[in-house]
Length: 397
Image (tube, rainbow, N blue to C red):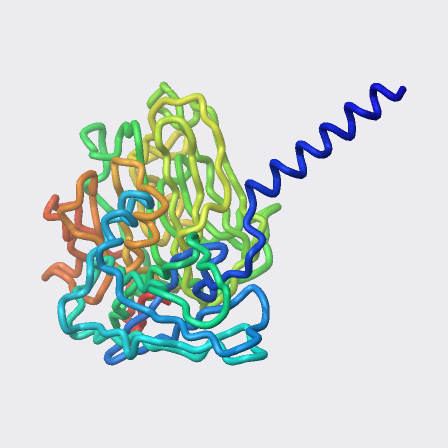
């Protein structure tokens, strides 16, 4: 028994020494709000400012002076580690309003330092980032918490646009998506995304079809029977080797969260050839492993007619309709990453690799009333019924 006790005490002593060597017990300074993520969202509308502070892990006994600086040299490393493609804002479009903050004695949070930016010099759809770092600390024996030394301000230019408002049986068809020569007939990878604001869910078990191909892959609120009309349902998510949706495995998914009327959401589905993932506002909400194969957005429900195929604002022919606003609708033949989805809520480059079709729904229409596919591929969205246009909608939300 004594032998085992000695072994236990020896192991305990080894662990205590090893743990002490591996940890820092000193008090530290860090940029406030960066313990879980270094990214701080900064929405820029005209001349805009955001305040930064630093925090200490214990109250200061004397005043602590913390020097701050812009750190553009860190941007390449940030892009490489996050998979982003951020740029510095143009010279003269942003500034750090000072160089020092103070944590006063008896406190654990500093005075503010401001970062100012002007949206007039920022381009729509470009992801900007400004790294701001702690440079040095004076007063007391304080470490700098390296993982939270730098805040990466993610600048997004707020834009004001028109959006399409669908109600009373109005919707959009994509005639050039029909047929076996369709660009969405058999996709090995895929992303579909849309920015939408439901304005009326209707009765408890109503169906509000937002976008897609019934029922190969249809984004909708409710299902008319068991799923409430304020829950987001993806039906039927048919993926497999056979071209017909009814003969493929289904990965239908309903999200647990409830959605609010008159609130903007960015919704996306991504299929990478292995997994299918479901996103809301740039956050992964659900994912499923698949057996692989292709997804077909050009064909729909069994015994289909071509009226059942890909549309925006309707499902199952012209039987179900959406009530709400739509904007920034895109179809891709590649799997978009989570950072690409987050950075592209309001706009993407129409020449982006893998972008099949892109309808902005910003009020600009062709002579025949159709909405231009801004990729130049010619897959214009043709209105059905009377579409209304709503002014002064902000993006991001």
